[in-house]
Image 1 (cartoon, protein in one colour):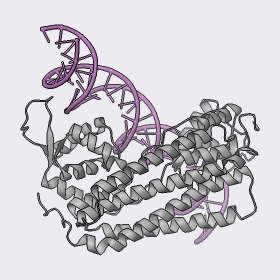
Image 2 (spheres, helix red, strand yellow):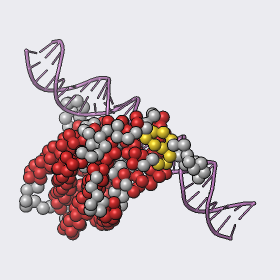
Image 3 (cartoon, protein in one colour):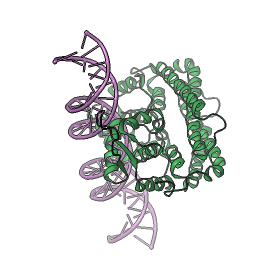
Image 4 (cartoon, chains in turn red, purple, blue, brown):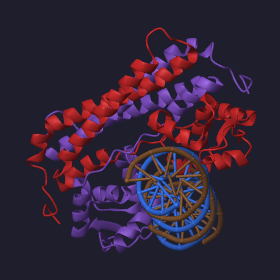
Length: 189
Length: 189
DNA sequence: ACGCCTTGTGCAACTAGTTGCACAAACCCG
DNA sequence: CGGGTTTGTGCAACTAGTTGCACAAGGCGT
């Protein structure tokens, strides 16, 4: 029940076509609510038929029939309603932690390499967030909108920081973990 | 593609019936891979027909036809394979962050109360993890299995710590955020 | 002019997870 | 001993997200 609201938010920030939305999801909103272009188009259709958004008359008729949408006031109202409504936090799902736990019974073979890869990915993501922070939130700007968005970005930064630290610590422990743990399918059947 | 592996892990730790698994998911594995009893029963059926687990002959024939399962060597092999295979981290999905972002365009009404509620929930979860740590990982034990599981628990603790801190900070900022941001549907249509 | 690449939109089928309900056996209480 | 609660198992329908493909329009190279 969140994708439509993510799209409404993005469209309120700036009316856009499906592809533009897709790109913005890749760069910004998608950091905490990812979506593919197929999902987005499907949802745009539904939002339009529900009367929450409408297609703008295309100023540029050319170029592959590009359609931009804007949010109607019913859409804005729905988004405000959803934002204010209480919602329980959804439990995390983390495959890597699951694999660690599995490794405790079937052995750590292969895990370390992938953890190193994850560490690199998280480091990259962290660097990207820091870039964005430098570019979009230089000290000085402090309108309420900016501060809210900055808060969201800080969450991203802190989360990635957490993961890089946790992974580094886990990898440091790894040599002693690998000896001693059951080594594979031949452990005990 | 992770639920079957979560179940295999749990069954290797200790052969169990569907309901026992459900309870253990609620208390332990479910902290990073939750599942309902319906999912679990469905998956047990599939794992059995795939020859990865098998039902133990019930020692206690009574008590509502309780069926326990144990992992076969094909199941252990599959789990080891899965654990070792590279996997990309799945992008997070966080509704609360999405709502903050939405609040930047439709106003912060109602959000603060729910953030306080989330803070409490995260504090509870954190306390629970700390209990578990004290109970299951007293200083001294350091077999490789225990250290791996402890590492996983640390991730849980640190994540909850992060959320409580982030929420506290966000709430502290809230008074200034609320003034100045657009206040509701009447902002601009 | 012809074929290839990129841009932009979208449908269809599949997979995983959620919600709602059903139902039998045992146990517990009066 | 009869009726409600708990224990234990499970099906069916629905919702959300993913994967794979299709196709038209315009640009670009030769």
